[in-house]
Length: 117
Image 1 (cartoon, rainbow, N blue to C red):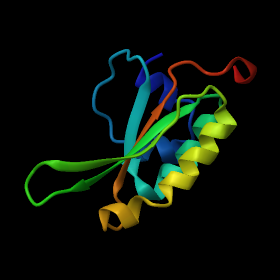
Image 2 (image 1 turned 90 degrees about the horizontal axis):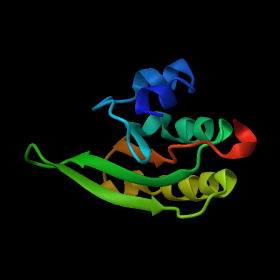
Image 3 (image 1 turned 135 degrees about the vertical axis):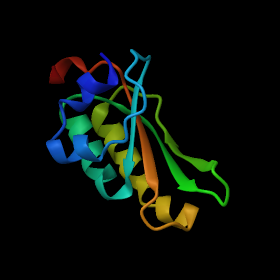
């Protein structure tokens, strides 16, 4: 499954907010979007059976480069546990970057869990 196929499983508002980079088949799927839709994107991804593998927060630096901070990393296979972990860590994004509404990069499993397909 590629990034676009996975995003099509999500509500329109989340699809529209996602910042698209490439659409190559990838080991794990990831998408970046504004902080304001990250919590809903996490919930929707888990609701359709994906496991949230990690969150990174990106904020603009003084030069054209981005500052990226890893917020969470989950190595398990349970979607619900990954949701809880992601939400707990997401709440720290603005504090860590000292930025209002930073960009959030969500990485999720390429395949959905068997019970949710």
